[in-house]
Amino acid sequence: MDDRGKPTLHDVGALAGVAARTVSRVINNEAGVSRDTAAKVCEAIAQLGFRPNLAARALKSDRSLQIAILNNNPSLHYVADVVRGVSRACKGSGYYLTLEEFAPDDCNVAQAVGELLRSVRIAGALLVPPLTDDDPVLMQLEDHDIPFVRLTPAGNIGRSHAVIVRDAEGIEALVDHLVSIGHRTFGIVAGPASHGSAKVRHAAFVGALARHGIEGRQAVFKSGDYTYRSGMDATAAILAVARPTVICAFNDEMAAGVISALGQRNIVVPRDVAVAGFDDSEIARMIWPPLTTIRQSIMEQAAAATRLLIDPKTSPEPQLIEQSVSLIIRKSTSRE
Image (cartoon, rainbow, N blue to C red; front, side, top):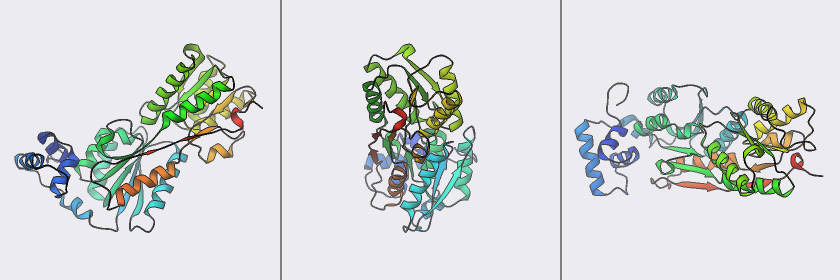
């Protein structure tokens, strides 16, 4: 039930044993739902006395609507690239962009999203991690019959349209390269556990290092929150217990913090300690030395996600777009 005690799409789906999106498809007479499933949904609707959100349904036919980016990610560079990607995909399509930001530590994001959906005309939503895996937020969107796409979700991939990245392949390529040039002791600045990408990258690092026989005290993991400051703090924590020959961060912004923290201690990069990041964001090319990193196109991911929302040819069945990554070697890991 919603906060006014009215049954929602999610309630109907739970009673009928189907996803909320399937309920929406039945209500909107979309193809691809079996007669038996449609009958179960209709029975659940009657039993609960559910009334569809007519305003939300009407919005679907309005071509001059807003795509909302729902975000509580603290990485400014990442979010800026997402905004650029969505903006480019919306240009000339009749859709416009709005950015709804929430504090990273806000425990009431789902409630705020519900209030937003009741008061603002939204044609669709793009969720930025970690909101991509925030179940109460997803339920709000489903209950309000708002189409959405998730960027790099960690779980329940088939719940919605999604764009994911082959993060593990990039980590494996990076570790293989670093081991090939002689590194055997690693510091890892990981991401927050609430981010799906952080979980994937952490598991990939553990697996890739173990494949080369590197584990235990040879690999020190400390967590950051994808911000520059947290990269500095994690570096201090790593150096307090070990002196690795290379420190790898889960994004470029934290890697820049690593380089700064090493510089404050007169530790020269890469002569004394090599540094690597992930993303190949603008900061990777601006800092000195230029950063070895794993390239992914955040802008293209956001653009692809937006096209899934606005393209009328997109199938109602959850679509998955998977993007590749590549290792970019620069001076921050050079042995020359």
